Amino acid sequence: MAKAIGFFFIIFTLRFLKMFSMLHSFGSDNHSGVAPEILDAIISANKDFAVAYGEDDLTKSLKELFKTLLGDSAEAYPVFNGTGANILALTAMTQPFNSILCPSTAHINVDECGAPEKITGCKLIALENTHGKVLPETVRKELKEFGSQHHSQVKVLSISQPTELGTLYTPSEIRALSTLMHEWGCYLHMDGSRISNAAASLNIPVKEFTADCGVDALSFGGTKNGMLIGEAVVFFREELSTNFLFIRKQNGQLYSKSRFIAAQFDAFLRDGLNIRLATHSNSMAKYLESSLEDIKEVEISRSVQTNVVFARIPQKLCEELQKLHYFYIWDQDSMEVRWMCSFNTTREDIDRFVADIKRIINK
Ligand SMILES: Cc1ncc(COP(=O)(O)O)c(C=O)c1O
Image 1 (cartoon, protein in one colour):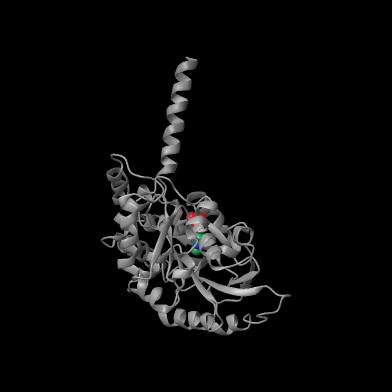
Image 2 (spheres, rainbow, N blue to C red):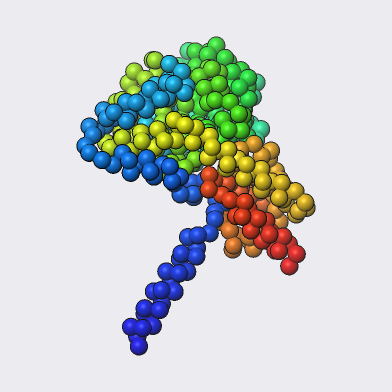
């Protein structure tokens, strides 16, 4: 009898867990799984032997693929994750006595546990911004004290494209920022952890708002758009690549079986899969925004330009909704929440979500 009860308990628990594992999450595009094309690419790469540490054929041809997409100056290096890509790119661009400017909302400033400061040794200077975007006037005010031994020396401006608030810089805005930084002998870094969402939304190739706009180093994201693991650091200036192999190894971001990151990027980039996946997640955010239009309790708080919707909602609604769906409160004081769509969010997921909002409000 006890055995039978135990058996039914296990079956019930497994069913319960499965039920939850099937729920869609609006928490982050990191909550989604892996695109089937990417898994296929990993399986295809899983044959025979290959030399490790980036000396394999797949990784070598990935470097060429990045050049085809981003121009001849592009030198790409696969790494594990977005934080690693940012930190290593910044390390290559600075010395410990430098400082790095970024909007206060930047992932490097808020969500990397102080790793950029620890690893680069640089001071991070957080700038005022509008919906995650900085203006040249704001940056210009910090370009001072060059040559003074008492002050950290500004060397890099880091911007995110899209920003952490889902907004986008236009190519001319990026060009204005890079021109300003270059005038002062400094660099422009771009955190492109969702760069494919930016390209899909702007409807232009990544090259046109990076290399062509004077970006010096780019953290090129893969994971948030459907890869299993892998990002790339891309440099557009030869001098920044010089010591990068050592920097990557010393900081634990050199993957021995590099062919498996390269295989994913190949499937992701070669025929525009990245843009198709990002176009879908962007369009789901737009669909969510339009589905919320007639609900007066939900106030869209930022312009929806990529795959994320920010909204202010009543606390009671938030509490009830969080019992049914996973998402984050972005700002507790103003009750601003973040709803993020992924490459595998469906219209049905959104219809269910919006129906639940309406049901809670009308209760
Ligand atoms: C804008 C941005 N940059 C960088 C990262 C870091 O990526 P990872 O979590 O892979 O380190 C994130 C993660 O959410 C992000 O949103």
